[in-house]
Amino acid sequence: MFFRIDDQVIVIAGANKGSKGKILKVDRKNNKVVVEGIALVWKHVRRSQKNPQGGRLSKEMPLNASNVMLIDPSTNDKTKVGVRFLDDGSKERYAKSSGASLGKIAPPRERHASK
Image (cartoon, rainbow, N blue to C red; front, top):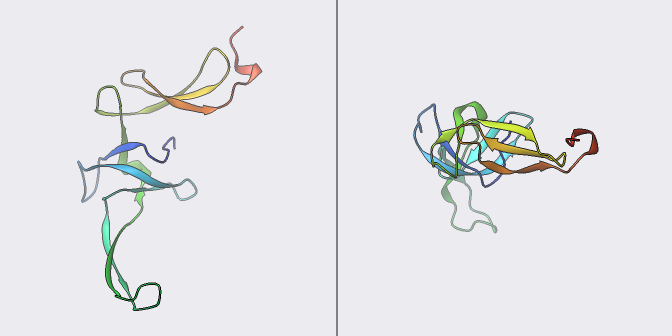
């Protein structure tokens, strides 16, 4: 799973299909992502010193990572994510549809550098 916090994604399955949002949290162990404004539920909160009003709060629930796709920043359309090594041996994410870079994910390593 090559999602990162602050990536723009689109929901491709479920009740919120077609909705776009920004990733707030990534849970790699359970293969889940929390997307801003998607999968909202009501959480009922009792009155306390921390929350003197009490009542119902709206919060985002995690989605399965297979139900979202990354939005390509260059074309503004959904795309698959690939990983490739650069000439200096560093690893980067890229959009498979356009080939645009999505940022480095690993530092340069000598064994992966092209000679």
